[in-house]
Image (cartoon, rainbow, N blue to C red; front, top):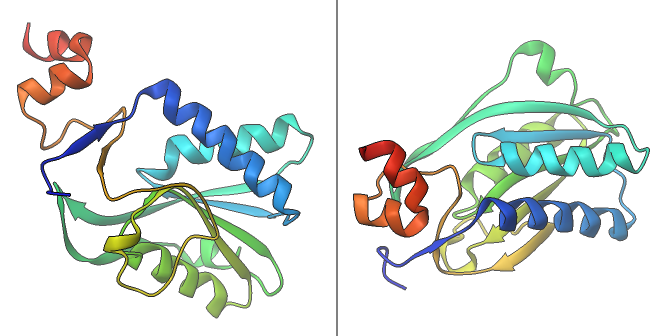
Length: 180
């Protein structure tokens, strides 16, 4: 599919899929102790996954982690992951760590984060809403995912790189707020 073809995800769709992802993890029988949420895209997914487990009486430690690797439609550099020494201590031997993101594209960010976690002796699994199989270059795959796709996904909060017409297609109310 060409880079300009885009699939617009609604807020409701993303929220429900995030709860579906949490259910998939629960049903797998694997019980993570720490949720590592990759900021920014993984934030809304991680919030819902965390809420799901809390509601089920399964309190989880959680950690947002700043990652960056994208600019517009193309990945421009190797991922940068920002962790303090105190945060690194959370990845102790034997701890089950779930890495959460919105999309698994090239796999570089997930592989790098998983490497940081496992290098400290913790077990790491990756959960995401979307897996772009054809773009994955690491030979890795997410442990949990809902949708395999080659489409360009535009999440509810994303505006960067969209034309006015695309913003309107995404949500006329947002276009009105931006341009009126």
